[in-house]
Length: 181
Image (cartoon, rainbow, N blue to C red; front, side, top):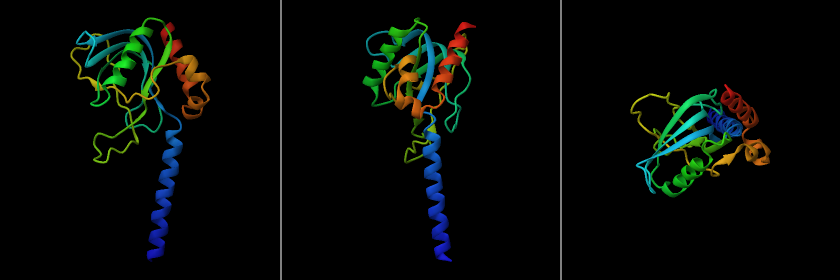
């Protein structure tokens, strides 16, 4: 009986590892968007929060590599402890790009699960696109900076991104279409 249980346990482990690597291959970048405006809070050289307005495509909650359709609104984000320098670098780059109409992507899709004591990284980023006029939302944690802020040209023409983000070109097209309307 023990060899059968061992075989089943090994089979389940191998299957879960192979499935998670396949699912993870369809998403690397956390947020795609066309950024219209960036506002730092507090205003100054070392903000702790940021409000990023525009049109965004974000992961489904508890996803396996999927994204929601484009939403117009704003992201309200705060810095994760220990990621201050990289996060502020991303925020400053987003502020530079704001209003250009260019599609960008930033942050990591797969993040540590806040409810798992070991920080299992097979948890999709959870951020909310808030509707304009929504008052006093609680900030989400800025996603782990991955490759900096990437412009659409780098997203769709980069072989590494094309391999890992299998729908990146479609997401870029959806955002450009949403921006026109």
